[in-house]
Amino acid sequence: MTRPWRLAPLAAGAAAVAVALVPASASAQDGGETEPISGDVVVEDGLELTGTLDEEPFDVWANVLGLKPHGSEEILQVYCIDIRTDIDFDSPYAEGEWTESGVANLENVRWVLAHGHPNATAEDLLAESGAAVPEDWDSAATARVAYAGTQAAVWHFTDGFTAAADPVIDGTEAQNRAVSDVYEYLVSGAGRMPDPSEYFVELGGLDEAEYEDGRFGPYTVRSNAGPVELSAEGGSLVDENGDEVTVRDDGEQFHIVLDEDSEGITITGKAAYDLPIGRVFLATTEESLSERATNPVSSGESQKLILAQPRESEVPAEWRFALDLPESGEEEEPEAQPQLPVTGSNLTLAFAAGFALLIGGLTAAVVARRRPSAEQTLR
Image (tube, rainbow, N blue to C red; front, side):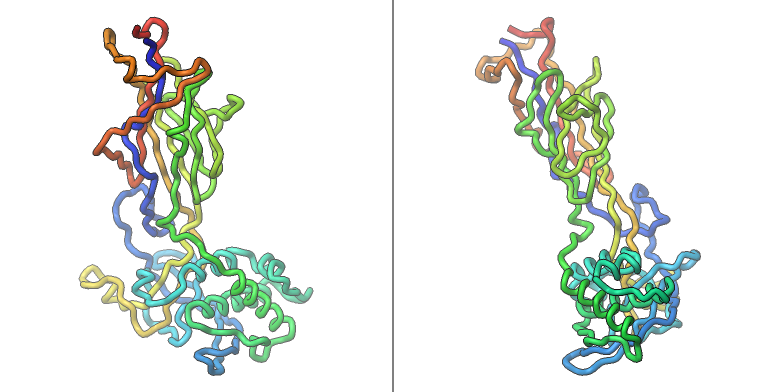
């Protein structure tokens, strides 16, 4: 009988990736742990806000906060997530765990930061929220109200602060309207944003894929981290029209075409996304930042801060398909392989038990079995 071409996973697993929160200067491919960012707080004048906290009137300054990492001239924009505590400007700050900060509603806060300032420009944020911008406002004045409205929305979820209808103390009518509009837009729209550990890139369609017209497929890209860049070694990836593809969105498909005389193909996928919105910074002492410290990151009696600016990170994935042809003289019982239609072969998937391929936090390897040529056909 004629043996069909088929694809069978050599190793299978969900393409789940554990992503470390690393500074922009560190490589995600280093494989080792990186030191947390430490730095000093810088501040620019902001707006004084009024509202309620614990059902009592409450006034608070929404000064524009930044964190200057040690050894860098870059200023990272941060927000306060601890409205009841003053900033100790004499203490450096270092990255800590969100659970260590003891602050609630991270998913809502992450949404606010993703849609607030500076991830949306001040002008875009005010336009999206429906706020009017006076012609005499310069970029600094616009940024000040965008920051204040975003900070008030952050405090709403972290501390239970509710901004007043006219939230800016001694503010102009335009400032009050703009801050209020930004605050209402961010609070009312806040939804869930995935934690970075929930991002994935996977390959679907293994059970349904067929071999027809010289190609295997279709396979479906699954990703919640954005478009997936694809590259292949040992073959090519094509769409339904036979055109080569290098990027697939979630739900889009491709086929595999092996190179002539190829013994397999390795497909590499990569989805880039902004990481992280939601990095927490806690006050420390110089002693706690030293190598001699038992606990290198410990919170002090100072405001807890959260990073507002995203940094790019990646979710990698890899799938390997290896050619497995029958050996010369090999025989196979008819019942071991069903007869297949002329138009194509349903792929039979045989998982190799107890084997997992992990490459730098990624998974998935698959073996491809191809129907032999006429000279290789067994009868």
